[in-house]
Image 1 (cartoon, rainbow, N blue to C red):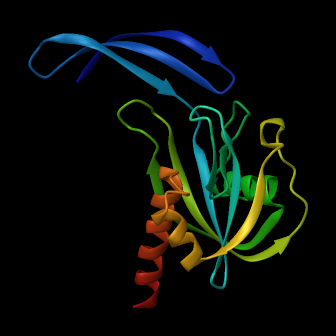
Image 2 (cartoon, rainbow, N blue to C red; image 1 turned 180 degrees about the horizontal axis):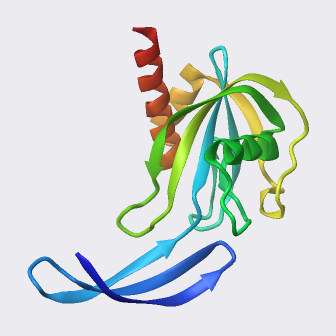
Length: 179
């Protein structure tokens, strides 16, 4: 697929929407709408058998949802993925990690968005005070055992795609490091 031209149709500090005129492999032309958002980091805080999740109201779906701490950097200059992960963890939970391991990369919604991210495992945790953003005022954090986490997934209480993918990356990481 070839991009013939591109125009910005909407922008705010968190995202840009663009419309690209494209040429397909067969020579036909069309348009493609793309949501551009900054790189994100997601952190799986693990303490023994416990995982820490955050719960907040997600405006686009109108529901409160449990998920792993995650977010993007508001600055125009991107942070290194590990630094962004450490910042999101500290900001949303107050936790600091003595050890941070990259679990893998995630493409948020590659059919509509250019946003990509990294998932990290955080261990050797120290508790501090969260420093949440204005949009996160209603956020709360709690520890759950793995069994509780998996039950919440089965009951549809955890539906965040990035959190589910990060948990799968955690299981693959553990399988690789155990053998």
